[in-house]
Image 1 (cartoon, one colour):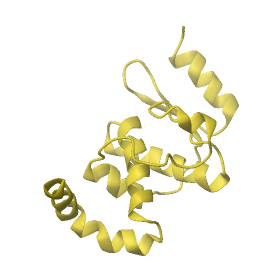
Image 2 (image 1 turned 30 degrees about the vertical axis):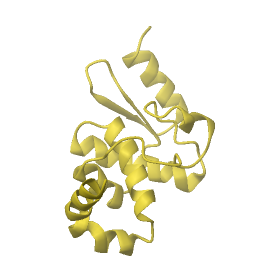
Image 3 (image 1 turned 90 degrees about the vertical axis):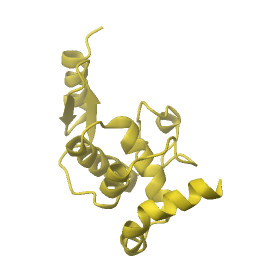
Length: 131
């Protein structure tokens, strides 16, 4: 366990000042990064997902990510990270930008589709995830 912790500490050493500056705990950043890691495959998608999930948190919405179904039942982050996020996901968790979107989905080909409203999201579901 010490070897794993030392490796983790070494890998995120450059991000520690940014984590402290963010005003968020390391656990919060890593837990959010774990959701981002599970939901997005490319860095561009992870940036968008980060912005959307932080926005949902700020609005008090349930995060509703498929990779952690408890996020449909409860608002806020899961109690613990759901996986071991990579540095890209940790970094985008720290550098969330603003976005007009509040919803996203991944189609059967792995392409992301974004929506500003729930009605747009439902239309994306019908279009990109037909039964």
